[in-house]
Amino acid sequence: MSNGPDHSLLLEIGLLARRAGEAIMDIYREDFDVEVKEDCSPLTAADLAAQKVIAAGLAQLDPVLPVVSEEASHSPWEQRRQWSRYWLVDPLDGTREFIKRNGEFTVNIALIDQGETVMGVVLAPVTEELFAAARGYGAWWQVQADAEWERISSRALANPPVAAGSRSHGGMAETAMRRLLGEEYHLQPLGSSLKFCLLARGAADVYLRRGPTSEWDTAAAQCVLEEAGGAVLDLTGKPLRYNRGESLINPEFLAVGDTGIDWPARIRGALGVSGEE
Image (cartoon, rainbow, N blue to C red; front, side):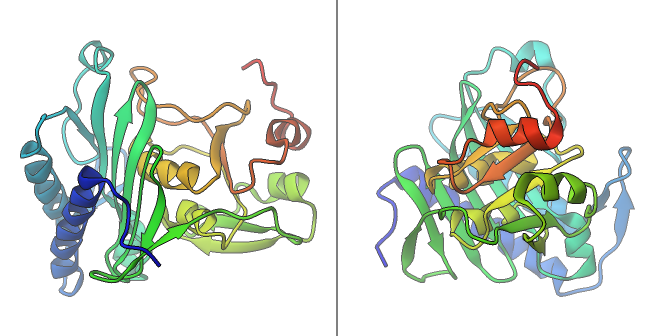
């Protein structure tokens, strides 16, 4: 156990995530309505309440940086392409899990610098678990508010490996996962960005995502996993990057805990993807 990361801004963002989590839980405990957005994804009052808390908190920081968030209007690419640093936010990642009331949803806040995620906070409001990381300061886990901080790290690839999988988008990666890990791997379904955090604390080994995700879905947890010793790679084997262009949709990716494995070679063998893409 430890007193936590010696990084005042990271701790401040962690507290901001906890305030957003409290706003989410106020709604989670009551009846709530569900709307459907233009992209057919669900939206609740909890998404908007958390967005309001986070936007207000980030606006009070010095310096004030631009914010890209799932639940806010997005600046055009002509403007975003000029940004070197900005906040990337998903106020409620896993709205489908929120609606199911299974607790597997998170608050994600990331700081992006030159296309890389350099700070990330992931809060699970139901359990109060908080994961936090900043470039060069390691990855940390606080099991509940006011608890001691524990520094976490990913593990060497287990035998048999454990694959984290999507709770609401399962099945898409099963064949590819067998090719990547062999027939004897175990599957651990889990919602939202908690899959990355499972790898970061050494409780799983890989997470393969086939299908679309948005940049705010991955950035905060990617920082946590990278600082824990892992990596998030696109299917050409390159680290996942941000603010790549007009679209905010990520390429398909593989998150891993053990970076001592030649994952690009495994990707090519399992998925037939060329490193030249």
